[in-house]
Length: 201
Length: 158
Image (tube, rainbow over all chains, first blue to last red; front, side, top):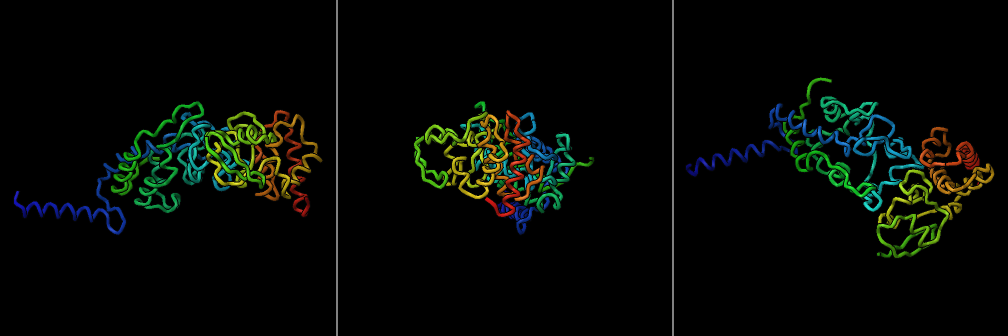
């Protein structure tokens, strides 16, 4: 290939790269079909117990892979951080306490009710319903696509899901079905496709 | 082993323990402060409740390495402030205690409630005290003592 043609190809690739990320905004680059496939992967993580246990539609968080109601009558409280005699921070510290089996992370709290990914019977919502929630800026702390990507990349409680520590019985807590890197790649693909949501309820 | 400088009830205490040692063990075994009780050991009953930086905390499951420089208040020191004193006074006046084993944890949770909620409703009490188990079922008297303490504090008492 002549050098002039190589230079042309390189220029086009660079131009596409620049166009894909303009002024901090991800520009649509993937097809809707690719985006929906990526959303399936994202959804598989969001509905894993490490994530969905604190995205309840009820007055309490859940625990464990069986997603049982949190022991000790823990309740949500006005800010999702429990109540004065029984805060999340009554047990959950800034980091995992592996010697006692209690998970921990910065600002441990329940997701607000508008970010619920379950129904009131503790059943996970559909792919379409979770997608609608997570893309509704009135229910997602006003995050756009790149904001959601950043949230998945950097939020300490999101990242905790891949470092969930040791259970009281000494065994490791299970991890989401994707690695964090795969989760980010899938989120990026979905965002780059314009955050498409499946149709249906 | 590691050395930790702790602030407990306003006093400096130094302990040399394994970093994984729960705070409850440090209080009871190393500092001989036995007012705080071991109940379930898995944060399910509330008997071990102390305050860490003002937060009612289950000391049986918090390793000492996680405490840092946050001040700790135990049942031995809770009477040093007005809310703690009012709660303790009304605990006695209402004759709340039966066997007494859970009561230090109950008082610590009740003080945390009243420091944040000056006029607690029944729901506030149910939610804040719901994690503190009393095998003697003194719950009605616990509720009464909390409401009486709140009323006295509202009048500027204790």
